[in-house]
Image 1 (tube, rainbow, N blue to C red):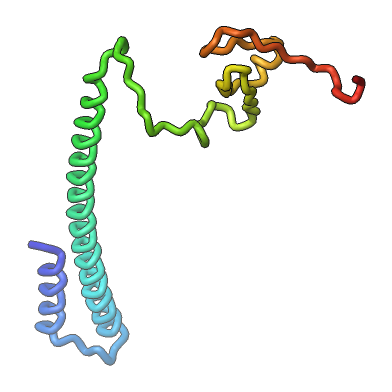
Image 2 (image 1 turned 180 degrees about the horizontal axis):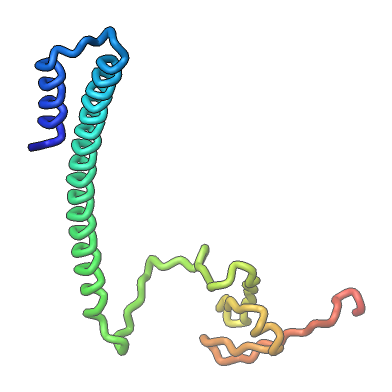
Length: 148
């Protein structure tokens, strides 16, 4: 027997006993049976909501599984490239490229050959960098330009 059925049974028993609801005992038993009926309705609503939420979660899980499968398939496409392949993305733009640490300052210098070289503070502290295009060594000075 479900909780709803039990509450209805108790209500029927109370009605069958023909309790005098004008007396204290009858009022109390009637109030308890009414309370049980209300609790039963609320519990039934909670069970329905729980079932609905469970169904929604199952659908979300299926969607996430489909997304995961889709992403894994795309990652497999990138695995087709060998490390030895010279794969370059011609549309690659290094503006906005994240060098890792947000506090890192990125410097640029133009070589005599026209190649623009980007480097970080660590390279600046070393004092020089070699141009990858022409092989020329570019040196950096920390002296103030005002002293000249």
